[in-house]
Length: 245
Ligand code: ATP
Image 1: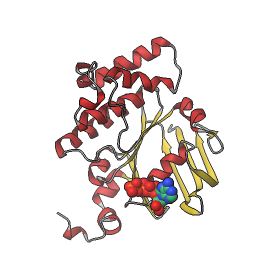
Image 2: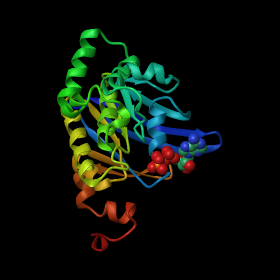
Image 3: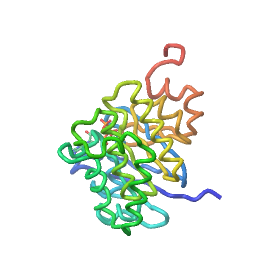
C-alpha cells in the first residue's frame, strides 16, 4: 500500500505582508518523483522553503511521515530526513569535491559507518565526482557542480530530496544527464520533489505533477496526463497544442 511521505494542507505562507502561498494542498507518496511546475513567481521555491521552515507560515499544515513540520526550524527538519538542493547550487568553490560532500553530513549526524556508506553510494552514482574528488569545487563544470550539489544533499541521508531548478544554466546535453541522475537517486529509494522550468523533461521522469499559478495549485495529475493532455500547452505555455514545436 502507498505510504504518504508528505501531506500539505491549506498552506499559507508570506514574506511580510506579501502572501506567496494562498492555500496549497498536495501530497507525495513514498518512492515518487513529483514535479512542481509553474511560471516565475508562482511560489514554487516558497513552497520548498516552507517545507524546510525557512519562511513565515500563516496557516495550514505540513506533515512529514505523520509529523507536523509547521513551527519547527530548519535545523530540526533536516535531521528528520528532508534535504534541499537550492537554486544556483551554492557549492563551496574553494573546497575540494570530497570536503564539499563531507559538509553534507554536518547537518545530520549519522554513525561514521553510515557516512562512509553514503560517500561510497555518491561516488557510485557519480563516478565523475570520484575521479575529481581532490579537485576544488570551483574547477568543476556547471553540470559537475550540479552533481556535487545533489551528492552533498544525499550525504545528509534524506528520505525526501527537494531540487530547485537543477537544470538551470546548463547545456542541453548536460541537462539530460542531470535528469538521469535524478532518476538514479529516486531508484536508490529517495523520494523526490522537483521544481523545474524545463517542464517536458521533468514530466518524463515524474510519477505525478502539480502546476502552480500565483500561489495556488491549478492542476494536478500524472506525468503522462500532463504530457498527453493539453494542460501544459493551454495553461502553462499559454498557447494551443498545435502551435507548439
Ligand atoms: P522562480 O522560478 O522565479 O523562483 P517561484 O515559482 O519559485 O519562481 P517564488 O520565488 O516562490 O516563485 O516567489 C513567489 C512570490 O513570492 C513572488 O511574488 C515573489 O516575488 C515573492 N517573493 C519571493 N521571495 C521573496 C522575498 N524574499 N521577499 C519578498 N517577496 C518574495
